[in-house]
Length: 421
Image 1 (cartoon, rainbow, N blue to C red):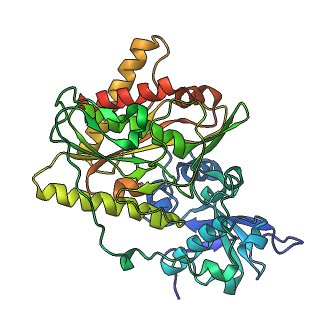
Image 2 (image 1 turned 180 degrees about the vertical axis):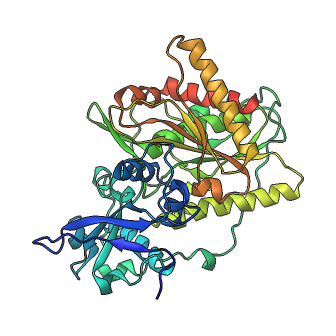
Image 3 (image 1 turned 30 degrees about the horizontal axis):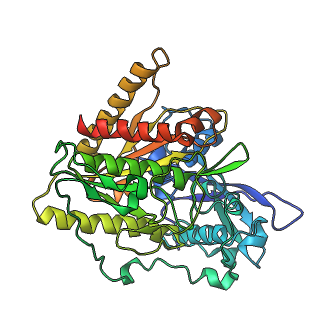
């Protein structure tokens, strides 16, 4: 088999077969840029892969790749021990092993590696699995209460497949926004009744997607001995934004749902795993299935609403980033590549946030950004989309933005103003 791109690896001599060696190295082809190269190797969805690629190759933000030169990918090489991924990498997380196995098999399927790792004893470990927020990070999983799931054998990893094409068509229940006070139990008893203030957003539909959930807590932070899980805080802000949209006559769909949480005015939100999606289905353990589950639901709703003549539809994904604890960041936004409508909406939210910072924190300045990103929820959903990162969950100052419920409400209020501008 001839690989479509020249792939080179360097194995360092070690005393133990399970010790990792060097990084995967690739030769840049004509037309390659940082994003297109990382996209080819399925590394673009995690921002930390981009940063690590630049660090490994000593590149700046504006660096261009040189045709014919070898560059290190943020993918380490392990000498597979012939027993299991967990024993090879020295980590007992089963879900982490699943993610590593899926990544290696995906590259094999796309001819980006020549042989199966069990045959050539070369295992690839992408950087994001251990260093980015997400379900594959073995370092994050022990922080969550064990709900009794058993770690499977190596053979069980073979059973984790992308069954997207085998699923039944998505059934989408109807949602209607009516006049007068309305009751929505998903907001919890204290916030269930939602008044209709005006109809500023009438005829507009919003698909609100809180990041992660179910078996995946997302990014993890700690504060005063408490664990902060990204999915809980992103969900609370998403709920508040959803309620704000309803107050102004818009039609929001909460795609990820937790029927027993509601809007919470607590500082520390208890992590759980009982989230579902619109329509009531549980969240799969497999990351790819979870993402396609959400985008499939949104696309089905989009087509139904488009058939009714509703054109103004927007997908809003809400996340919380994880970076070095010393790095403070402002709210930043992504939009789909080439999507001018998404870019315009992201820019309006960005301008609103900047104006609010100038109003309430004069002199501080606002350093949030707007940029294109090739992320699943932006790429695979039919409506124009905006992907929002609220804070760095590891930074003590940024944590104030999410742990105080008043700040979570302000975030939702300012996001609403950006949508109404």
